[in-house]
Length: 391
Image 1 (cartoon, rainbow, N blue to C red):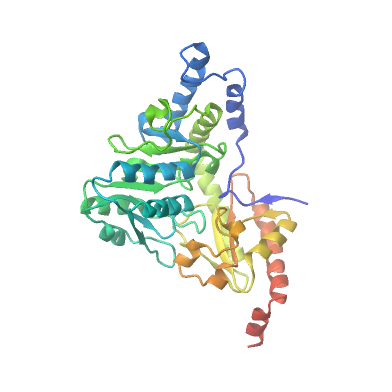
Image 2: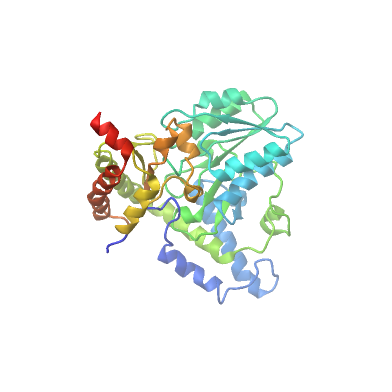
């Protein structure tokens, strides 16, 4: 059976070039970067080189990049670090209704500690209104955190306009964006976005799992997330995962150099897949029709359960997902789909196909060849669909 992987929003395969760069730091260059002897020299230089590579990807300064073990850790670091360091200013944060769970759950934890969270709704396409975000800012607001690109519906937010409006309303405030799905995928520049903090993860652009970074603009007041030694200028303790950091750095460099051709390739496949899927009766695209990630296609299929769709697609050699990887096993309606107004019953029929640079038009054609038959088969067993057809 020909296998097709269309779950790149969950993780991307490691680029072979990245793996080759990582290997020496498992073996010959195994030293601790903090060691003063020669075994620490190579790893230390490699970590700083990777820091420069990541900084260049997003238009930052080297010293503004702090390595983490994931995008989720970076999000936790941003929200909790800013909240705890600035509680003398205020204990109010603003987020959107479609944030990643690492942001949502961090906010809920802060609520339990006495912080107040304002959640901004989105429209039917999943877009946040910049004016609504600015209006939510108060004298005691210390942080605004809005996701850049949704891993469930693909919508890309107008972060630059949001940041501009927020800072016009209150000059001394921090703006964070979860850019895990955008950094390394589409052009991202921290100065153009106007953000003070930005989260990214290597696993989203063909780097190693367990690698991530938080951009922290110079002068930002933030508490360390992991207490320990002097690593990462004392802001993130723990012995550096040198192989992962090296892999993240090279993945960032490759993404920057190849971004144009990657975006063009993914956009063409995405549009081809959208056209074919939505040609099936009662299959609807979710997210913004054009302002979306180049490789992400999200749909809802009426009168069919997403889990059954995934199982039959998998049996046909096609790997996809139903909503976020963080909740797909919980079999609950996605908070993102609920936020854009999709009814709970319909949200159970959600599907997300996330394309990668290794996918081909033949992969898309394979999906479109089996998808209508799978939908037809499942609807034949649906009493609700039968009633609609009779009516």
